[in-house]
Amino acid sequence: MELPITVPGPDLSVSATTYVAFRQCPASAVARLQGIYGPESRASFKGTLAHRVFARHLEEGPIDASDVADVCRQEIGKGLNAKLNSVGLKPPELRLVIQEVGALYERFRTFSAVGFRSSEVYVDVDAGTGVTLRGRIDAVFESDDGGTRLIDWKTGQLGDADDQLAFYALAWTARTGDVPSLIEALSVQTGERTAQVPSERTVRRTAEDVGGLVDTVRTLFAAQELGERRAGPWCRWCPILSDCLEGSAATDLYDRG
Image (cartoon, rainbow, N blue to C red; front, side, top):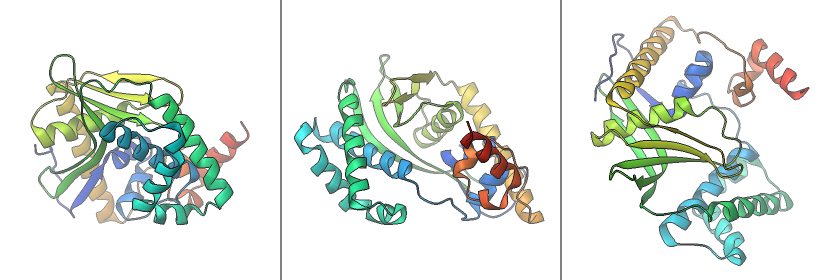
């Protein structure tokens, strides 16, 4: 699947995170595409660890409550030590994170695994004109109609997941040639759920939006500009927060409640 792109420029890798960031604040997305990232956080580390435990459950079967802490430490050792070091958690703090992941897992294990196909599916698709679509789909299930159901697990509040789900529908269609029957975001913490039923029309619309992102970013790159800044709850994790008056004001406001 080729995107409707009109502006030539450098190769770009567009992920779900980049797409969502661009829809929220173009300057933040441009910074990410320039290799400027925000610091690792406790919440992101906990979320990544929880996702590893969820995937292990789906791939290997339920984990006994007495073994969850050991499984967490195994998963950290297999690929999360660098992230752990970046966050700088001390042993007592890490034990608390593992306890919180255990509580999330107790909720997760109540979910049905009927129709499960695969977990943590990485998408890396050449979309033409120097653009690659990238992402990781948390879980793939067979849908009730025999098609494909994609799920994105959330370990915190559900939030607004519409743009993220739309991007995954596009990436999956570009990877497989088939539009998924259903795509969902589900908060393991709260039980909240939101879903989309993609169609060829909605996938094309998202492709147009991603094409617009690429055109805008390449234009900004050529002009050596970051683009429009938009303040919101997302500013807390922005890689350019320290240099953004709008974002700093927004985070101060949210911190005050």
